[in-house]
Length: 358
Image 1 (cartoon, rainbow, N blue to C red):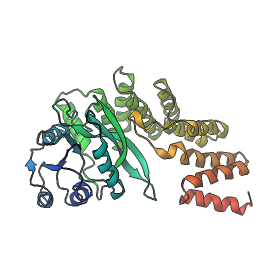
Image 2: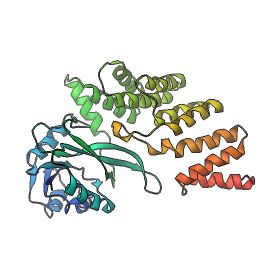
Image 3: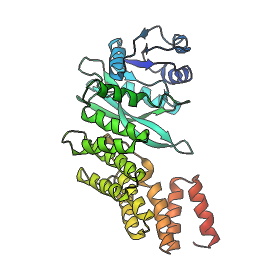
Image 4: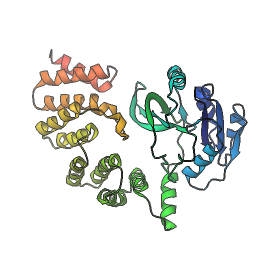
């Protein structure tokens, strides 16, 4: 059975840290805590779980801090978590089973990362992240923000999921400030960082600046394919906010120059035509979304609802607008099979029941 060091970097996480450690402390073999300047009870709380607590002066570089935490690990694998992450108790047995069965030549274990949830608590936004990494100098974090360990060696995928559940909001300007500090210092953002910088500008409603950064990223020959596709989506949202709807459609369609269409992008294109009352064309794109395979292993962000619930609900709307209420009702029932608790589904059901449609 492999041994695992849980390596965490923390700062002022008294609200989250006990919940996180309670969820995983009995499953790992060592806990490494690197504190980057807490002024609350974080260090006091973690001392009940481990004596391996280290101080690290924060230098606006997440990869540096994570690499320092890995350097203190003594087990075969390093596992990272953020303080506001948890391993749900329903996943504990699978976690231990994976430890018992992991082939000795595996270098990286990729696990699901759930970062958003619907009204029933089901994941609505997820993607795979490197979670167990062989304790070796060849595996090191890169990136001041949105840090990553480039995958190499033998990789195994697991459906075990870590859930990101923040109790309170952090500093929303932190990442943007780090990027802008880097640029002010004359540093060049590599493609992945450029993509995330564009996203940060979008989150801060600096739409024109975000478009400039993302369009430059899309034109560059470098850059990860999944980031290119997702950049088209973010760029489209910026164009919508700027009132440039045709430009938004164009960049969404441009996503298919990088690879076969993703259901997420098909739903966005369908929404464009639905809002422009071109219902037949909207139907085409929502039907296409329904028929696209969900490739969770490509590494990009996945919105599970875009592969069933969202297009089904939107097809219900389209066919109702086209006057085919029987077909609209059928799509609503299919959406209800995905999410029987959905308020939109229940509202539509009441509407169709009032029309005596079966």
